[in-house]
Length: 497
Image 1 (cartoon, rainbow, N blue to C red):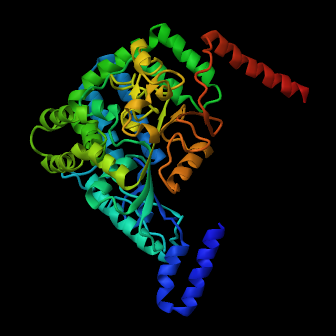
Image 2: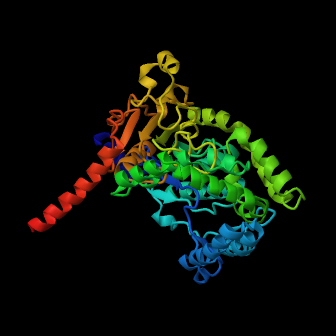
Image 3: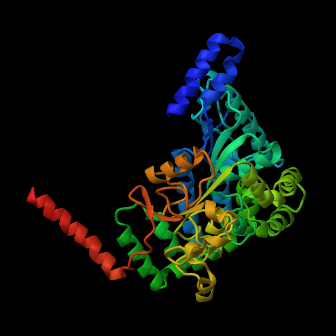
């Protein structure tokens, strides 16, 4: 601090004596602090029906009234289907309702927004942009990542120049990682100081790969596993998870899943090309989050099986441009970035993946598979541990306390932090403090050098603590007893009053 004060006083004196030296002195006084750009994830920004007239309302998220209209129309249609098993009648009733709700957010056959739908985003006033400040980049999360990257480049240049800074630091989350890496690939690495990849989808999500490859499938086991994630923030999660485990062991969830799979099979010939594909396969960012091993199968399924008539060749061309310009160079670009800047990776885990594809057993943060978010960690299936052979051959420092992760295979094993039991989109004081520490770091911190944060941590009560390993497993009966004990304690306290 004393050295910085001396530098500041020296610059002020020099400014009085030599007016021409004023700007360089200010640069010295500023130290190493740079502005911070935050690139958020998928569906992070409201989309307007008309960007020229905000009063027309939002295209996304859907209005409650629109959702209720779909439910009101779908329930009687499903009841009729349960009797007559006529999939066409069900599609006739439900598809128009769903399409009406999502029409405004679908892209056209060339991958462009319909009408004037999109994001309303104003840059911060130039005089308000400071070194050390945090500035959110809002973008249309449906469109071509290459187009978004160009917008991010403009925003970075504005922030950098407004703050009088040679560089910026970037924190990105989820899809924001894809956008950030696309920006770095297209516009260079020389203007970033730190980059924090916080649970990003750069290497994809198995859910997207399975969905756009036509591999939708339900199972009772998948539902039981995912409910643990869905009920994570619910006070009665012990009881609710217990109920689902009972239903699973009784075979009722498998029965429901079998019915669901039959429904998917009956509806797919019409629902996929008329409803599912125009929405999800039409969003270009979804394609950027398909893992490499799925991309060929997904391209074949959508553009040969679902849309074989060439009607979406404009959309396909944009996907192929990303596949050529960005997809093959991800690892190469990340390694180059690591030479040019300080790189930090945060991966979250402790949950199964989304339960509508065969890949639900993948260890994840409820959305992104751990192996992708960590840039290559070796992970056991959800609820399992690494094999005895893998553990015997591994270096202990890289093995998670629950024996489910080997961090040594990450692209940057010494610059990757793992957080157990923190859902994908959850923000709390603990993770925010870690991200802020990393994005403001003066040099390349590692798991060995960063005080207060170990390689493997667990999210508990809004804080990040060193991971002690899994607690002793409670039996189903234990959890049910604990829930009813809470009820008893509540009424005891009530009558005491």
